[in-house]
Amino acid sequence: MNLIPKIKKSAPPAATSVPTISNHPADDICDLEALAAMLQQLQARNQQYQRAVDALIAARRIVNGWDLKPEPELVWSVRRDVLAAMGDQEALAQFDREHAQDIEAEQAVRQAANQQALEAPARVKALEQYITDLAAEMVRDVDEGFIFEEMKRMVLPSAQRMLSAARAFVQAWREMKTVEMSLKSAFRLTHYSIQGDRRTGYDLTLVGKPNDDDLLPNLIEGLAYEDLVDLNQAFHGRDLELSRQISRRLDEAGVPSGLLRVYHPGASNDQRQIYAPDPNPPRKRPPEVPFGPATVVTIQT
Image 1 (spheres, rainbow, N blue to C red):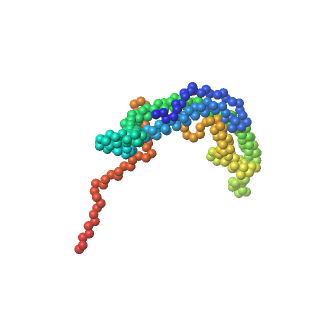
Image 2 (image 1 turned 90 degrees about the horizontal axis):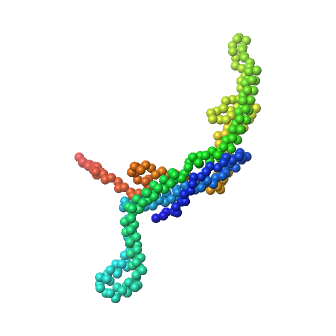
């Protein structure tokens, strides 16, 4: 039984050329035709796989005797058998003329029920082979190396913009730290009491130390504390508006959203069954207690 139409096999997609650096990160999400085609094919095979697993679960239930066999109605067939046993050929002929379709429908349902039970073991075997072949197609046709190269192509412009901005930041940071150290060295004062005791002087720190994983310290004299905290929070966060724009570009290009799975056929000597958990397995009877409940005996004295 064909679950969904066979997917046409295509040649591995070729990587696209590296685009020039754009002015907006969302514009870098482009030339997605080959990538979208590969992932759309994988998505279709995921759907095929799930339908095949559902069919395998149903067939296993029949083989294991978990589903009760349907009882076809034999109302008209039984009545005809009674007339035939009575030997009244005229009444039998009239009955056949009036209820031929009813009898035919009953026999068709009866034959289908018997055929389903008879074919269930072969159906399980055929579905297992189909699922194995489908998994091999997924592994063969999904090129994660190509996906990774495409990801690098699209992130490269943002990385280059970040590198340029980081170089400017490092230069500005070095200038600020150099100015601070030069001023602290030039205006270094040592305090003593008239009794010769060493005294603590004024703290001349202009730039504090950044906290772990922060970009900037929360103390840079002359800058507002709130501005520095906001920058550090933005450094750890994501641009939600940009994220929405990129998601929209991917969706418009036909790249499937959500989790896609790549199933592997496994080793040829692996004798385990294909994993297809039944969502509604039969309930197991609780084990019988070997001994009954203790009897309390009260002795009247």
